Amino acid sequence: MKVWKLKADKLLLFAVSAFAFLLLAVPIFVLVVSGVGSRAWEKLPESSSILTATLLSFASTLAVVCLAALLGTPLAYLLSRFEFKGKRIVSLFIELPIVMPPAVAGLALLITFGRRGFIGAWLADAGIIIPFTILAVILAQFFISAPFYIRSAQVGFSSVSAEVEDAARVDGAYGWQMFWYITLPIAWRALASGMILCWARAVGEFGATILFAGNLQGRTQTMPLLVYSVFERDIDAAIWTGLVLILLALVALFVSQWFAATQDRLV
Amino acid sequence: MRIAPCLRTFCFAVLALSIIVTQAQQKRTLTIYAATSLTDAFEELTAAFLRDHPEADIVLNFASSSKLAAQLMAGAPADIFASANSAQMDLVVADGRISAGAVKSFASNRLALIAPADNPAEITGIEALGSKRLLLVLAVTGTPIRDYTNAMFHSYEDEYGEDFAKRVMENLVSEESNVRQVVARIALGEADAGIVYQTDVTDEVRDDLLRFPIAERHNQIASYPIAALNDTALPELAQAFIDFVRSEAGQLILAGFGFCSPLSEMAAAQAEPTAETSQDQLREDETEVAPCEGLEAEG
View 1 (tube, chains in turn red, cyan):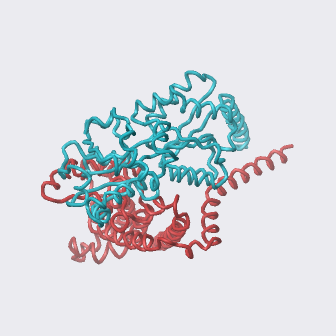
View 2 (tube, helix red, strand yellow):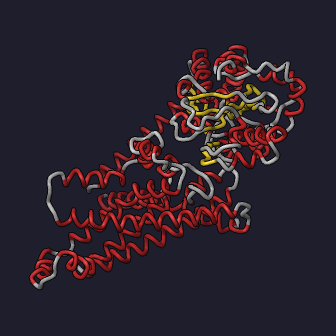
View 3 (cartoon, helix red, strand yellow):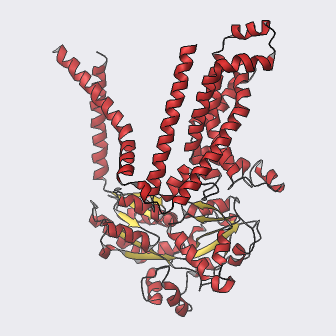
């Protein structure tokens, strides 16, 4: 009797797990199969829109990753090395964009940097209008994806033990030198993995971009916006763009996992 | 054995879910897919309909007609489809989920040019859209409102020059996924001008917007068709709702939101008006068509 019960429990465990897995895997599988099966890439009347969206996505996300590295690295280092008042609030604000709905982020950006916005009105007086430009796309993507890099970099810096830095200091390394020759070489895998996650999230950004930057081919229409804009009149273009995005996401996932794995082995 | 309680919870959840599902079915829920521009009118029509049909329940799903048509063709469950043009309705008819005979027109609408209340680009009418630099926002290509808008711009070419539509498009900065999002952009003051339906200037945004009339001979008649889906589980209730929308009471509610009755329009245009063909017929009958003066007065 007990054996039977055990079996039933195990069966349920497997059944529910299989159901959960299928729920996640089947839609992606169907998209890939139907895209490949219907040879979606052969019937692309609007292939120019795919090309411009791809170029725009690459340009904007490249800028986002550079910006995240430039501004996010000092912030991550600061958070991993120093204790200060209000540090928890700073951390909270950095992590909030990861969990908040992107549409809310877009709305927040719009009422801050929009033409009538808190800062935007002041910029508009100076003749700078951010919405409907690639600058708005970059800002939206940065807002949503930079936290992924900052968090990962912070963990990376924290994994460099204080003794190593102390030893370097004893040997005469000062601040910048120590960071460049000691901390960065040890933590670079975590930084690279964070950069890839940040990039992948920026490529997929939709909600904040469409709300804040608008949607126009060749100007602010990134790949996810293209999928949304054309799926009802050109399903093949939408599927094809979707396939490219899935491929990019897979590559990003593999590379970032590889970095994380090698980092673990080192520490 | 930690999983045994899980099994019990699971069974319970399934039971609870099935009770909810059957109860929902008992309540006879009508799912209506309607064009975004119908939002306020259909909310009131639904409320009025439910007063007479307390046993029924209605779920409204608003999106651009093209998005709704795509969802219906992909098999989305619905009982009624109300579109902002015949093109999107025809797609669903061709797909076989609606029979051509079931399609009835129930309302019509006109285009309007809107700007933020403080008019940052100092526009005075349609001509300004092609003659100065400004931020123009339109609905995305493929939506009915965009088809009507393009037809309207082309219609102005005999007055403002052959490349007028092209010049206008150079000012386009964003394509919104539906017409209410165009209204929101203008009401927020983020863009200088947009083309929407005259019924989209609702009470909530009236103070934030300026509305400019479009000459009757260039304006387009948006004709709204409605139909029950062939595979609806509630054909009588669906038909009752459609009859109500087309009844005098329903038409009165629609008129309250600035829609015109299709019956008077059709008498004038002699035929089911589409964006392309109605133009010439309209020109002749211009004087007879009284396009819902209530909203035309301001602006």
